[in-house]
Image 1 (cartoon, rainbow, N blue to C red):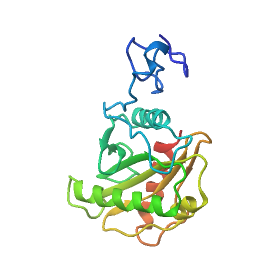
Image 2 (cartoon, rainbow, N blue to C red):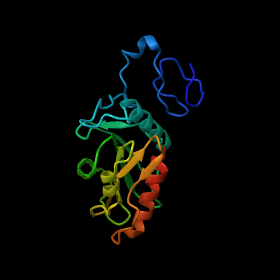
Image 3 (spheres, rainbow, N blue to C red):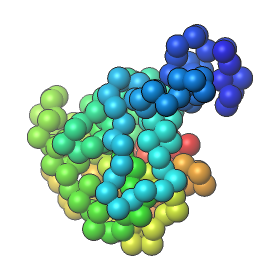
Image 4 (cartoon, one colour):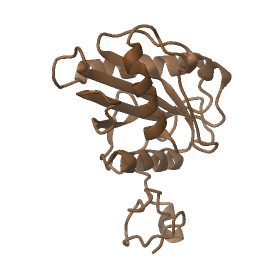
Length: 211
């Protein structure tokens, strides 16, 4: 069996290509019974109320697998957020001891309020579950609440372009990703508080989340 995206050989029974991370189509006779799951084995959220669209569970699974391969991490799943989780220190933003939480879900049709709620929930969860050295100078966390959308909604875009709330030794960068137009959108300005860190935080988003 071969991957339809990159042409690499894929072991029989695999759900994802080991080379590009793309989902492997099930044989036609089995497709109806095949549940879409993340690489972690957790089921992909079947739907987001009011947001059916292009970013289907299959698209979400493929995107998460792609980012996971880039980060060299195995994705998890946070049920209370309905989001896939990737945790890494590999992309350090040129700073020491920065833990990065990538929390990804689909949100076709989401506008400002929905993206803001997702962001607030992700920040609260990451701050509560952070385990590491005490947060402080060059020791903290980057939180990336990521929403897949196609097309990008204007209200959602306006929200992620704003300067985020300040948190002690924590940097939250809500991000929109259009997996079809290959666009990554987040804050463009650099806040005065934490200005030395924000360049690296944004660079991590661009490098880790590009598709």
